[in-house]
Image (cartoon, helix red, strand yellow):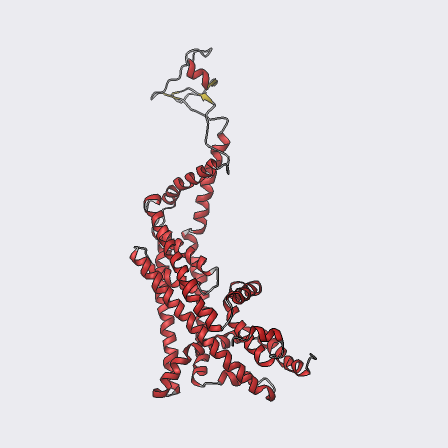
Length: 422
């Protein structure tokens, strides 16, 4: 099949628009996010505008988004401030003492499996240094341990090992002294590592960084909500913005592409919101029943992280373990802490089964009408291009690209094969 010049003519303005979007990437991001937000709120506006008018309907919908943001802050901020307060009052020596036994047991397990050399001290010979009334030591006699065990009175100079309040015997384990020092250094390294990341003195600087970060986030949120209000108020405004930069002869196809993309993305984003609500409720209730502190914070954070395909659940579970540990530092590790951590991990395992077999097949595959393997490959490509953010936006972007390909490039067999479901 011969390549039609109309495709080249269509690609030229797209390339120009892409360059402008790259240059004004921040503003373009606000507009796209506002469009996505307007698609989530579109069903609400459509119901309300019949009775209240388009201005009031759009205002109420934006107000609901503001309330949702306030609810998120209410869920996150107080528990996070409490966790910061807890970290400033941590007894690190007590924390190290609580971890010493599990660390020793872990080292012993490695030794038993032959994965690590046994570094336990084995006394082979003893230095006996008599100290009387803190006088200088004149001589030191090295006595083999075997001879001490056989007959402590037959050692040439008849030195007897006597310990009382006036005499002190200092024992030095010579052959394994370096190993003992190494074990102590290991515990010291653990202590330094914990103090490095949980040092109360760094909390003010972390707080300042968070203030700056949330300041930028607040500006972005206000900009997105402002733009979203007009998208909700004037249906088709986003479409007009897109078609204004394209030739008139492509206007009909462009409207078709935007309309189909909007329908698929609305289903996708509404499904994601439902997924967040279900996971938040399930995890929060389960952890509350099991007596885990900050259950709502853990549940909502896990639901947000679950938006990130494949690695999101790991991040959510890690956060849950971290919050549980920092909230219960005084608990005995084996008797109470370990069973509590097993309960938390059990809840996340059940949540993953629920998400993988019920929620995700209905949200991702059916909402965007794509094969699960197709979605998996697209997510991997998104991760390769943009990391975690690329993984999050991979499915929506792929949905839009499929619709554009179907509308403008439907003659190609590869396009027909990947767009036959839409």
